Amino acid sequence: MSSLLLVAASAQALECGNSDSWLDKGCRRTTQVLNEGETDIYATGYAYHLRSMYSAEKIKSFNERAWGGGVGKSLYDEDGDWHGVYAMAFLDSHKDVEPTAGYGYQKMVPIAGEWKVGAGFTAFLTSRTDTLKGVPVPVVLPLASLQYRKSALMASFMPGPKGNGNVFFLFGRIHY
Image (cartoon, rainbow, N blue to C red; front, side, top):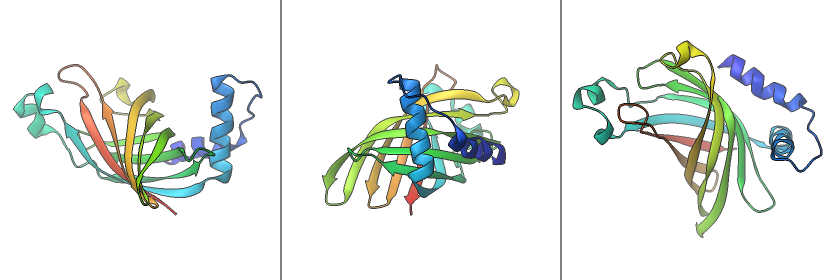
């Protein structure tokens, strides 16, 4: 995880272009989050494997207690939408440590008082021992949240064919 934190920290030194390309806009926003954002603490906790996509024996072999955590920085933009840069590590389905580092975006919608819901995406690098023998791979997944004040319950879904993927991942974020 320390190498992923180093990658995230070195992103602050990026020189972004001034064009309207999605790459330059993304670079500028990421740099803004790292420079102006507030600190987040992440706690991971649960990975639910869809029962219809695996045999009962395989489900029994999986670890669904995805304990772990991480740190990040986040920023709410001029529209009230959330942008975050993070690094975390947690126990995967086989109880191996899975490090991740990435960027997340959510369109935030107030629902009542200080309650908000969010929907968007996360793009990250991860490394798993059962995928390419630990070589980091890029991943883009949907991201949803239910937020109250500075705390959020967040969820993502890893799709896949029968017998692979099909996991709901739940974690928490505290913004301070």
